[in-house]
Length: 231
Image 1 (spheres, rainbow, N blue to C red):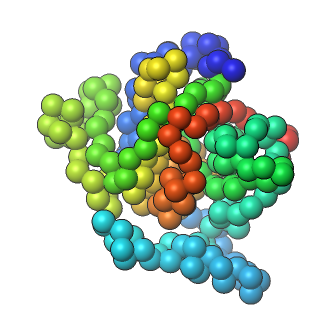
Image 2 (cartoon, rainbow, N blue to C red; image 1 turned 120 degrees about the vertical axis):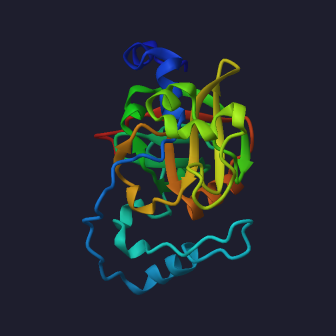
C-alpha cells in the first residue's frame, strides 16, 4: 500500500511533513481534565510499567499513570487492524499505536498526535531507530520560531536529554527510500497522550516508547490509518 496522494495534497506534500517532523516543543498547554481514578488491584502492574527508570542515560521519572484514561495505557488487546504480525499501525482516529503479533493479538499504546498528523495516511518503513536522539527542527519551523535557530542542523541540533522533544527513543519513518520527516518518539509531556495538541509527530510516554523500541526491529512496515468506527 502506498501513501495516499490525496493526503499529501492536503498537507502540501513533504513540505508539510517537515512541519510535522519538527515534533514541536510549542504544543498548547493542556490541562489534564481526566480525574484520578481508583483502579482494580491488577493495575498494580502499571506501578512497575510506569516506574522511574534510573538506569537510563538520562534517568526517567515515574509517570502518574492514574491521571490518564486507562485505555491509553500499554496493554495486550485483540488485533483490530487486519495487518499481519510484525507491523506497526498508528490509528489516528483513536490515538492508538499497535504492534501486531501472531494469533490475532497486538500490543497497544496510547499516543499523542499533532493536528497535521491527520493529513498523513498510508504505509512506510521504520528505516532506523535511535536511543536518546538529537532533535533538529526543520527550516520551516525555525522560520516560524526564530528562537529555535540554536537547534538548527547547522548548529548541531538539540542535545539529548529529558527536555529534548524526541524523548528517550525515536523511530524514523521512510517511504520509497525517502525520509518522510515523520517520527514516532518519546515525550516528557505524558498528559498529551490521547490528545491532538501540536503540529508534531506521534508522541508516546517515554516508558512506552522504550518498550516499543525493544520490540520493533529496523525495516519494520508501518501503516498510518484511521480505524474510527472499527475499534
